[in-house]
Image 1 (cartoon, one colour):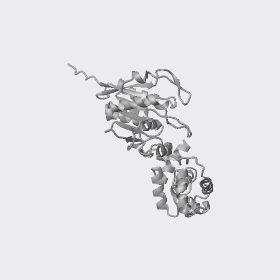
Image 2: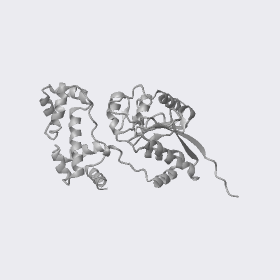
Image 3: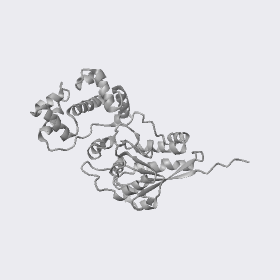
Image 4: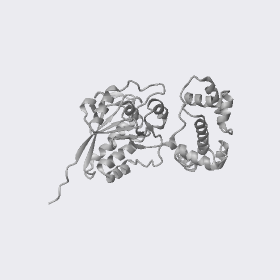
Length: 335
């Protein structure tokens, strides 16, 4: 007599979409995670995703495409919650937004659900107070927002996934396409690694071992009204390769060096040395993408006489070596 397979334990998974968000992560997660339910060999558990929003009514996403939620918040008790990406303009604040959604997420966290975010969805978790003291992955462009608005959060722009606390019950994922890595993580955790490998092969997703820093560019310094510092920023933009750039910037500002450093940090969010380094690395990245000059030559052009120091700094800032960065981006440009 053939052995009948044991029934799977169903896990209800709610994918939260907001009008300020897009559609890629919400619908992508729904399709990829839902594929596990159709595979009889997917392990002891099946994931049943549902697309949820404040109300179970269609609405326009930030991209203009319509989202059709399957459930409203109060219709969707879940074992797993995923908050999808949120698109806010630089001048828009998250303050006072998403009160119902935040209460819903907090309630699930308090009841022991696994709570996750994809890309900028971490903003909602931070507004909910769930990320204080935790390491958090989110889109690298949000580094300034997290530093200024959520100082207790340990923002990790280089990470694709972070275990953000509550004994493994709070997971944050990095950039815009990191929902794919989150999906594979959840499938591996609940359905087994064989199922995660099957889904990765089926959808051709995964493998971002170098993180998201190689795709990052210098974050835009915050707007400010310090005329002396703004004058220095415009000046150094064309002179970043000068020797001793911090001393040169301080001299050009006409301020005492200690006062200059304090005001520069307050105005831009960068220390002067971090600002100069970031300008140099951005210039080096552009040359690596578009020119054939050697790495040592590019290091000298952007202001580094010691190519070994340049290589170490470049890898710290981008997560890859200059040679790896050139290879990856030459392929991208030639594709």
